[in-house]
Length: 289
Length: 266
Image 1: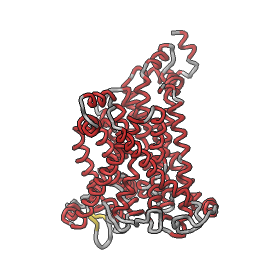
Image 2: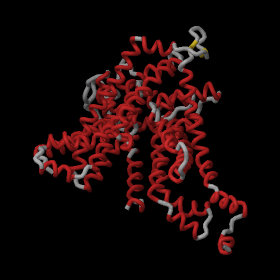
Image 3: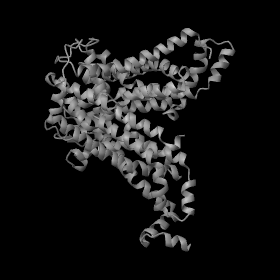
Image 4: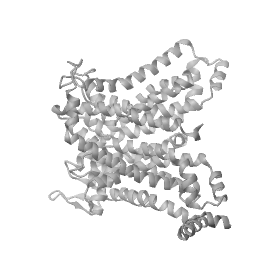
């Protein structure tokens, strides 16, 4: 004990604090949790709750002020309005199309990376797939604006198709990486066994590879689906006049100055994502994130 | 494996074509930054360095870049502190609601950016009465950056175990000394990796920024987006895009160094 007190050349205060913390795990834990929980638990969740409350308020038509009286009006408008239903369905359609395109494009790429490339090549291929993720989101959307412009390389013009193509491009790495990780975990011996038992390529894929990598694919789809669902920037850049849920929210805050309605619309993607997450939870996809 | 030669060739071709599709648009932006034609008609009309010069001289662009760097550094600093604290709490202790902590930390990035954006701006504006500015941008960015540091530190703590810290305590070091001499050095590369991701995330963010930045505050993505639809600014925007593509090599190099030079992974 004497050596400890002599080597600890620090003032007694610090020493006492250290031994107090050492003895009281509960105090240590509370101190560690205090700041993160105050920030994310109280401030952030509080902000979300406040937004949800706002969704049940309304805006005075003449003054534009928020009227703090409970009403279902925003949600009634949302459900009965033909336009909003169309926009919501279109957004879900876009998110589903992007997810499907990414899945079809990513799977063969991930398979070739995980099962056909040498370990050395694999390392480089992973870097090659990761690299575009570091390039700015806006820059990539902009690149497609340049490519798709009527006198550009592709020259297809802007619109719904351009939006789907650009979003698929943006989120492709988020689909490749989980599937690649899933395929890497799949032992080669299973594929050999399937072959020994007489299964050809397609049958092996259908009965062995796909069932075992399905959770990884679902994990990827959570990214592609949710990122597409909330997007409004790409739509503005390459979508022409196309409107998605995000645009309706944005326009109601900016031009229409109707925060309560914007808040109500913003609950739509959140509810869709919660339903989606609940639906895929049983597949074990959440452990693959 | 029982794949026919044709399937192997097809799969390899899919990989090569897929990667080509990933890189061609970026290459087009790079080429276009030297295109002497203002409208970017394809193929390029001629070679010029004029737009790179114009971008270099743009004061608005320089301000936006500086604002982005400040926002990124501020958000990263907060994320490093909060993320590390949360990771220690979750990895080293068992308590009620432990699973919920992870969920709350992931939530800001799992929800659509526009939801986080308007929730925060509503709180700053109407609930707290704070004026929107650089500070609110930093707060907004820090909120969704915590998760990157948290994930990196959590993974490191899981691998590190408690042996070395216990040895340090047995040798007489107190809590603070052990942290300074043992725990922190072992976490350093995880903190760097998490911080790098946090900075990149903040530097690239536009949606939350749109709602939390006041009228006078312009980060680089906001500047790009504002000038994207102005035909006479198109060449300068393209140069910025090209420069950002070239600059993205830096974090990739650093990330590789961090994962390669990390003794824990070998």
